[in-house]
Image (cartoon, rainbow, N blue to C red; front, side, top):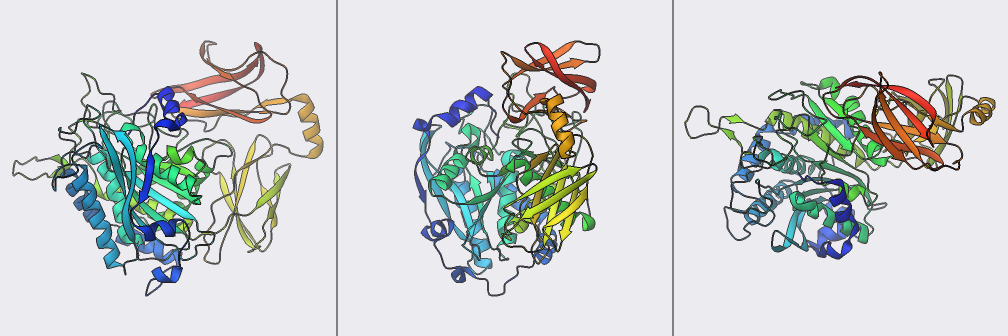
Length: 579
């Protein structure tokens, strides 16, 4: 799991001179499927299973903690999976590890009528003195290449010790990130039995620890070849349940605390973000398809930032190229990867191993990854993948007007299937309410009479599965007359921060009807005694303006925030920290 400064990351994204080159998909059939140039009947299952309710039930039953354990044990046995490690040995290094993963993908394909197209995605870039690298991939062709949507689920296989390019140390990388690799592998095993309209790519990537290079290479390839990526689900540090001393916030409640029933969903942006919409969709599918029958209910937490403080992951190269992308991460992490003389946590160290032998019989019997927890996270991934891969198209658009405590909505839908979902959101990262509209493209829904209202819509198919939701629209007005008065009264309006209360980070937003002439604009955060905590410079633009405020972990209490233009307060509100 990469750790970087913001400035370094901008450099990484900005200079293509040093980016990956010579892309090669070693399986030419897989490449044609990615590009939509194939005949679906060539990959059809003998017995087609495409009912989403049945698939959700079977995913829940078939995802195997024992399989996940066996994959992780095998991955740890290769000793060092550093991006620049040995590629020749049959038992040590990244070469042996990637050949083993490929052999597992091939075995899963053989068990399912050879429907998985397996191979490597190869690219050239000098990383840790090695110039050529390979992601491992398995492609499940969709039954409908038009519009040929592609969904990617990924996890990085490379590991590291305290020194970034140390290829001789013990670097089992169990939590970071054999856990994510194993999850992707078991999803390939389970999902290759089923039929989906959209193509699913199971991708195990390389070079994450040195700069997200494997994911970036494939994101560039998708962009260069106009591959219509509908969603990217990244899994990184997804199986551990024990809190370290230095876990990156927002994270653990304290050293050695345990959390095996929560998972964090990180994604970029707030209002109008396809990445947050993807995270909300994943949570909704879990709540509506799995939660009622879950033996151990999971708390799916939609986080404010794109990643933990000062950290990054393989969803970011896809997001930076406009593809909806998010990251699954365990609620608790054992360390923040801040390697120094006092660092004793496991992440990014020789201590990130399978576990310990407590009875001295030569066998590990106390594991640092909780396999049942990892399986539950795999089920959440698999259920979301199955529903997105139904390929239900999002409505073209919608219009909405607020009148008092009612929202009048009309959906623009060329297909006119007659069933829709309408999601409303106010002050949280999550939807407050998701309504169902049946038999019409127009409806009236209850809503809050004041404050900002964020609205998005989805289409529902004949099997009762939603499309991905549309981009959000903000509906500010309560009536046309009031809007004119309010606009004249408040040309700039500061909204309630979201979420509120919040843990470590929150979004502060304000609406500008018309940009005034000004020299300086700032958001000031002030404690209740009047002391300024932080001042954030902002650039005013017409419409919605947003800034993320990160206060830090372990803070409780109420604070005020205000928008100042040339030193004069335009508006102010109160916010609450509750971590």
